[in-house]
Length: 92
Image (tube, rainbow, N blue to C red; front, top):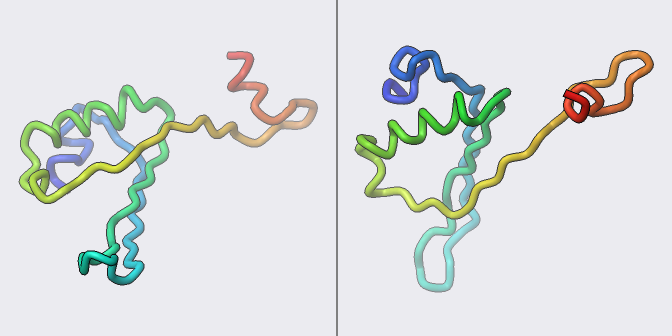
């Protein structure tokens, strides 16, 4: 948590939420378990990317992690009176 804090990353911050899951035992006897990590931010290049780069250089948990997949999604804000959903995002 300290390594990824805004104070340690030039103010780079994100609203994050982890979701642990455990779906039983796989056929090979290994637990089917893991962590889904979700974060919200205005600009991934100013928040997520710098923090992940720093974690990549010195996070003691890295040897125990396996990255499966990722994605980046644009979620438009609500529409004001007279606007359509995503107008401010699409016409910026």
